[in-house]
Length: 357
Image (cartoon, rainbow, N blue to C red; front, side, top):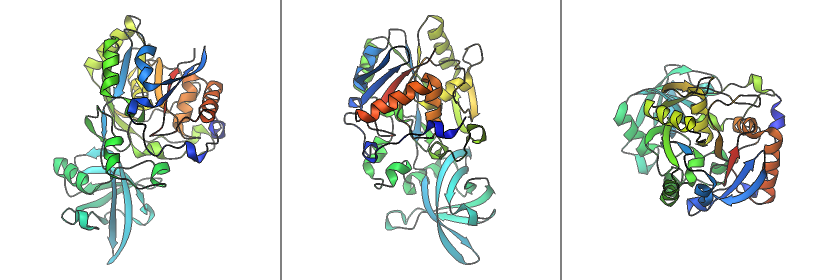
C-alpha cells in the first residue's frame, strides 16, 4: 500500500510535551466502527468494559539507553550519540548511532566522563558489526549487572524526537516516561498507552472483575524511525524481543473460551499477542524476537479491543490502527481528535479502538 495514504496534518500545539496529571485524567476517544465516536476520560475505562474482559499490559521497563561519547581513530576523536535498542547478550547491544558512517568494525568508543556529573563512570565498547540505517552492534567491556549500573549512571532517557527537539530531558521524565507496573528492564521507549494507568484505576478495574495480565515486549528505538519507503511492501521492521509466559497464555485462552474480550493496552502488547497466537486464535507460550508488520488486510487472531495513544503520520503504528478499526474510521477519528483538542503522541491522550468486523 502507498505510505502517503496514512499521512495527515497535525498542528504543532497538539503535540503533548508533558503527561496529564493525574495520569488517568487524560481524554479517551472511543472508536467503534459499528457505533461511531464518543469522548470520555481514561478514568472511565472500568465502566466501558465488561465483567470477564481481560486487559493485557506490557511490563517492560525503560532504561537510560541514550549515550553520548567519543570515537577514536588514528589519534583523532569525534563525538557520537548512540541509542541502544536491542540487547543481544549480557555485554552486547545493537544501537542506532549518530555518526555511524565513520565508525569501523574494531573501533573503540568511550561513553560517559564527558561532564562533571559522570566523571567517575566511563563505559568503553568496541564496534563488532554494522548494519543498515545507522545501526551498530557494540561489545561493551562491562557485562550483566555492572553494565546496567553504568548505563543507569551515564545514560539518558531516550525521549521521542518530537519531544526532545522542543525541550531537554529532566528528572521528571524518569518518572513520567515509565508505567507504574514497569518490571522487566530492557525497553528504550515506553509502552505509552500504559502511562495512563494509576493505582486508583487499577482498583476500579478490580472492583468490576476485569482481569489484568502481563506480557513483556522490549520496545526498541525502531519505533521512532520514519517509514522512508513509498510503499509498505518495501519497509523493513526492526526486531523486538518479547515473552508470553505459559501461565499468561493459559489465562487469556480461558478468557476467550468463556466469551470475555481481550483488551490490549498498547500496540506493543498487541504485536506480541498476535505473534504468539496461531491461525485458530489460540495463544501459546512464546519467547523470541518479532518483526511483525501489521497493515490493512491483516487478519487479527487474538485481540478484540486496543487501547492506544495517537500516532505519527506515515508511521507503522498508524498503519496498525488503520488495519484494526478501518482506514476510513481512523481518518475520521483523527480528524475528530484534532478538532476537539486531543493531545497527541507519547505524553498525549488515548483512544479505545474496537476491531472492525
